Image (tube, rainbow, N blue to C red; front, side, top):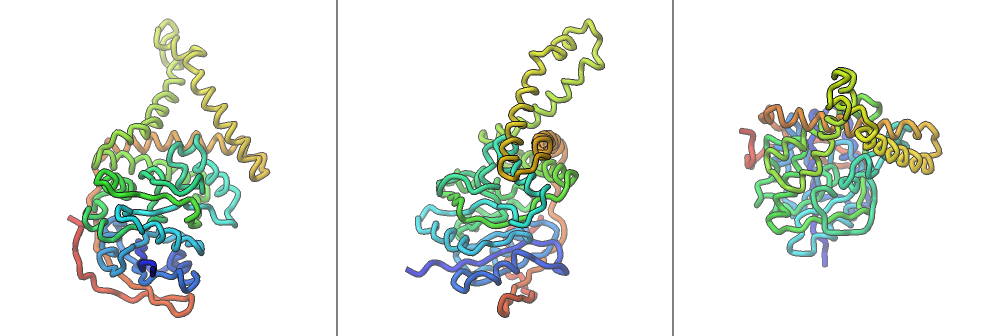
Length: 346
């Protein structure tokens, strides 16, 4: 049986720069290369991806971020999971590049840990075996979908970014479709290069989760509120500094019983740091990893607050579509007229 062909859609803000995802596809073995590659340029990735998929002729569409680097062997594994009639989505983890910097390796270890990412850590490490998944296992930078099911469910919400894939995956799962996670179907993707960008990423993820919950509430999302309560708890640790000495609340919050959860958090984070040191042999991770875990949870919690308190932005700007035409492993982008305006910005 001949495996179904797949197309690729990459969303990007401009084309006057290298696109690693498109470059990596050109370096795949001939039998693994896609039938078509579309690059959608604009300021709203959800709308861009909808347009790109609508222009694809292939039954399967592979979504990649512009900085995704496809590893040989990944696309055949993803394609193989669509033999079942219910299979709507297949995806795998995104891993750090082999030549990642020390900070990127530490950040990646945090993202792949229970303390850093809880149930969503499968997105950042090859963990376990092939399984039926939920949105907590899959990530849009390495996600293949069945085009017909995607269109039937009306694709990504045009106003939602980030977390547009999480909301769509919940809709697909609740409609009875199957989502599949394959830990061996991995790509490489860079991590944040420094602490400020790492904290900003955590904030954006928190804000995106809050907006997703406002768009399509699910009970399974309640676990993501834990960082919000973590922020409140951290601030409460400083309350005794401003509350009167005879205040009951101040006395409770200054007690060891009140502080014990934070001590437990630090011990568990330190344990993760010890584990990372055993992998990479960098003693600085004994301090750096617990600090990154703290900042990830703290700024994610702040992002939740920002996402809940601010309105969901409206889609902005037009979308321009290009098709990548390959000559060997190199490529050029040829403009394509958008013929289907389904899911256009409102």
